[in-house]
Length: 164
Image (cartoon, rainbow, N blue to C red; front, side, top):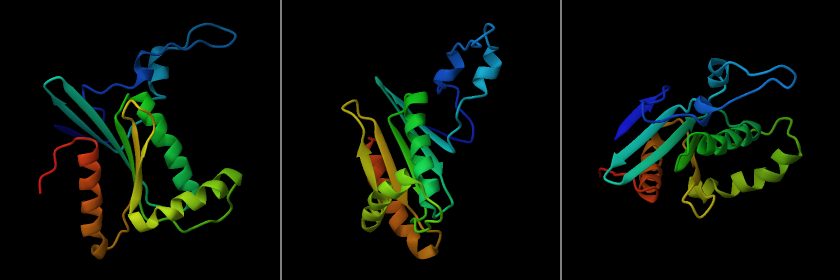
């Protein structure tokens, strides 16, 4: 198991690293510039074994804003594709701040509220095993035990080893 913080491990590559871009009016864009478009998840967990490779990406958010959570969801789904990962996890405090929201955020707020009592949700995106997970972790000592339990459940779900 390889755990990486704010850096891509050697065995994990963004699809953009091999991408080709071309200016609309005037030829190719330098590959080095294209690579700068690549994402960088906060934590990458790479599990390699006999005939098995699993990638779990984790992004931490420090806002209770529904707007920010919706943006984080877009980012996490993009990471699943960009890194051909098995699971993308958003770890965030329980949302509650509305502020100015657009129609999309208004529509999705009820989902984020509904999963509060469960500590979050795991969403199976397709039959290829892709998972988007949202884990609510409030930054207070009494929330730590619940947060650890939620992450253990999630790790079991994506077949990562969990020490008791």
